[in-house]
Image (cartoon, rainbow, N blue to C red; front, side, top):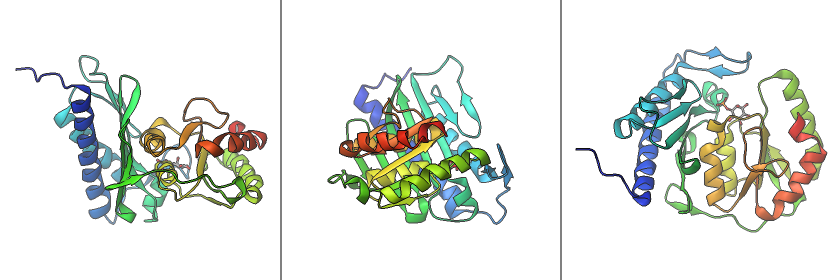
Length: 274
Ligand code: LIP
C-alpha cells in the first residue's frame, strides 16, 4: 500500500528527523571513529583537500536519507546530484559531508556536517553538526533556529566599528590574494575579523551571536544551504553582498539593521568582484 502523502507539517517533521539522524550518523563516523589514515587527496588546487572520510560521510548521509525517502534528489559535494528513477519527490537535499575539510585534516575546531532539505524550491530544514564543540544547530522554516535545545535569536545590532565579522577565502591563489586585500581594508573599520574555515559554522555563529556578520565569495550551495536557513530563522538577513537574494556566489549575512551599511562598504571595497 502506497504510504499516504504527508501534510506539510508532517513532512517538515520527517525531514527534520531524517536530517538530524543523518548528521548524527556522519558525526559518529568522522569524529568518534576518526581513523589515523584519512586518505587525503586534493581537488581544484593543492589546498583544496578531500579525504576518504568526506566520501564515507556522504555515503552514510545518502543511505540514511534513502532509507526513509528513496524518491528524494540528493546533491552532495563529493558525489554530485543523484536523481532517483521517476525524477524525484519535490524534496531536494543539499549535503556537505564535511564542511571545513582543512580543519578536519588538521583536527582543528570548526569542521561540521551540513545537511539541508529544500521543498518545492524553498529551503525548509537545516542541520549543522559541530562535533568539536558538541553542538548541533538546526532550523525548520517558520519554526525558529536552535543550538541543541536552546532557541537562537539575534540581539541588538552592534555599530559597524564594533562588529566582529567572519569571512573565508577560496582555494585559487590569485583569488585568495584579492580576498585577503579586501579583508585587510575592512579590518580597521570593524572590531575584528574571524576566519573559521567553515561556511556553515560561520553562518551558525551569526545565528548564535558569536559573530555579528559573515561574508564570503565563491561558495557552493551545499556550504550555505543549512546555515543560511538557521541564520535567517534566528533573525538575520541573508543575501548577496550587493543586496540581492541569497546566492552562493557572494554571500552576506548580518543583523537586518547592519546589512545595508556592511553591503555598501563591502561593495566599495570590491568584495563581490574578487
Ligand atoms: C570551505 C568553506 C569555507 C571556505 C573554504 C572551503 P569545504 O568548504 O566552508 O567557508 O572559506 O575555502 O570552501 O571545501 O571545506 O567544504
